[in-house]
Amino acid sequence: MSYEPPTPPANLPAEIVNTLNESDPKQLRDVATYAEALAEHKEREARLEESTDQEEVDERPDDLPDDVPTKATITIKEINDNRYDYWQWREGDSVKSQYKGPVNPDE
Image 1 (tube, rainbow, N blue to C red):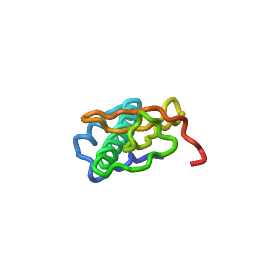
Image 2: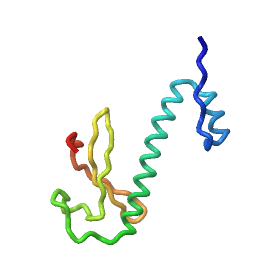
Image 3: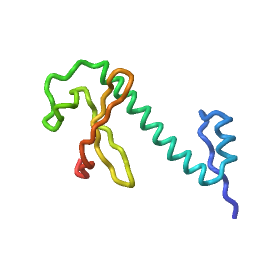
Image 4: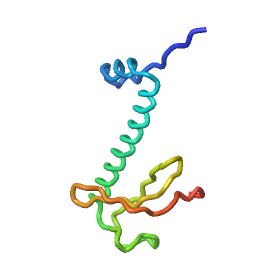
């Protein structure tokens, strides 16, 4: 029985496909982990950028700490197979984070 390798996405550049095809399984798993984290980072950056473009919200959510701006959004981070909520917002060129608590499984 022979197994066919997966077909890469059509929009993936050939040099990336070639590099991945030459990688060993451990490297591929590391690339997958990194790519997922990078995608989440870029999506978060886009959301933060979008939220800074919107008007300031007049009401503060009840669970928003005093030292967190109202423009902050909640981001989920996974650490050691546990998920945590963090407040995140942009200050100038940097992104600030503050721990909120464990992710509520009921949400």
